[in-house]
Image (cartoon, rainbow, N blue to C red; front, side, top):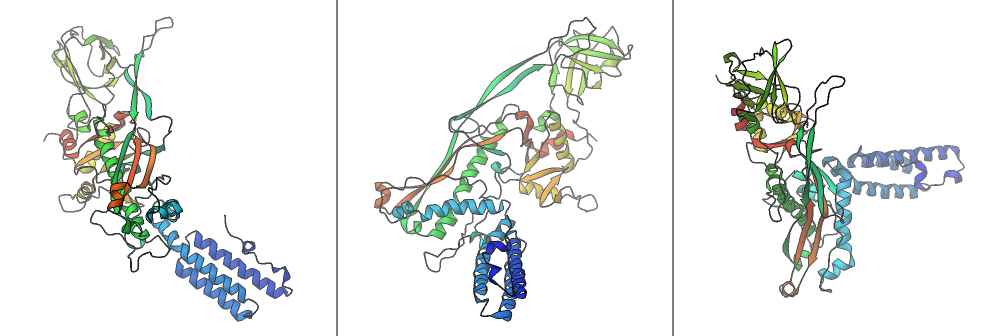
Length: 528
C-alpha cells in the first residue's frame, strides 16, 4: 500500500492562508513520493538525502519558526528511511529479497531478545529448551561477507567487534532443495506413499464393427518414502554465546549450509539403506542416457515373434511380438537377423502401432519370413548418429532422449567446472563456439536452464523434470536448539543442536538420468 500525504497526520485545516496551505500540501505530497519510491527500491540513500535536504531547505526558507516541527519530523523520517535502505538494497541484490531478510531477522532476533535465552546465556536456568523452528531454505543464498553480513542495526555487545564472518569454507550458493519443489509436510503422516505403474500392455487396434476389441493391461505398485532425520551439534563457549553478532553470523553461514550439504548427498546418491534417503541416481528407472543409447533397448531371441503380416498391399510388413514391448518407442532402430529372407536382415526405423506391433516400412512382405527363427536388436535412434559431436551436441542429445519418456527436462545440473569447460570450447580456427548462452543471469544450453551445483562431480550430469517428477518434503522444518547438561556446565559451554526431518519422494524416476558426458559423446559419435 502506498503512503499518501494524509498519512503523515498533519491537519492543514487550521492554516488560514491559502498560499501557505497549498505550499504545505505540495510539501507533504513530495514527502509521500520520497517514502514510496524509497520503499520500492527506486531511490538510493544518497537520493533520499538529497531530496529531503531540498524539502527542508524550502521549509526553512519559507518560515523557519512556523515550520520548525515539520523540519524535525522530516529529519526523523529521513533517518528511518536511511535505516531501511540497507535492507531494501540487500533485498534487490539477493534472489529472495525482503522475505528472506525479515523472516530470518524476525525469528533469530526474537530468540536473542527473549528473556528465556538471556537467562540461558547468563546461566540462570538449567537449559533453554528450543525456540520455535523456522525454515532457513531461503537464507543460504545470503552470504556473511562484507556489507551482506552486516544486517544488524543494534549495539555491539563486544567493543571493536567486526560484523563479518570469515571462513575458508564458504557456504554453497545453491543446494538441491533450491532445484526441486519443496513442500511442507504433515506431522500426522511420517511416511509418504504414492502409486507407480509397474507394467503396461497398450494393445490398441482397429477392428470391424462387430469385431472383438483387444485386451490391454497394466499393473500398479505402491512406493513409500520414509522420513529421514538430518542434523548436527556444535559446542559453543558461553563467552561466544554472549556475542550476538558473531553467533548470528555463525548460525546463518554455517549450520544451514552443513545440513543442506548432507541433503544434497542424500538426494543425489543416497542408497536408501538404514536412515539414508534414496537418491535420484540410485532410483530404479533412472538410467544413464549413454546406457539408453549405447546398449540394446530390447534384445529379442528366436521365438519372440508372433507373426509377420502383409500391409499396404504387400509393400510393407507388420511385425507382431508375442509379449508386449512398451520400451520400444518411435524413433528407435530395429535390426533383424535370421529372418529367412536375406534382404530382410537389415536395420529399420521403428514405427510403433502399439506395444505389440511395429510397422517395418519398406520391407516387402514375403511368406518366407520366419517368425520362429527371427531375432532382433532394438537400439536408440541416437546411437552413432552425429559426426564429431561437441558438448552442445552431447547435451542436446540428452534432452532429446529424455523427451521420449513423456517428460521434458526442466533443467540440467552440472558442476561449475564442467560448465566452464563447455564455455571454453573453440572451433578449428580458435573461435569460441558460444555453446552456453546467458540471459538475465541464467545460463542456457539448447534452451534449457543450466544449474551449477558443486555436489555434481566434474564431467557428470543430472537431467530431469525437477518440477513434476520429485519433491522434497520438510516434515520437520530446520530448527536450532541450545542445550546443556552437567558436563557442559562444568566446562562452561553449551551445545547448539541443528536438525530437520525430510522426505524425498521421486514419483517418476524415468524422468531423470545421471551419467557421464564423455560416455554420451562416445555413444553418439558416428564412425569415421
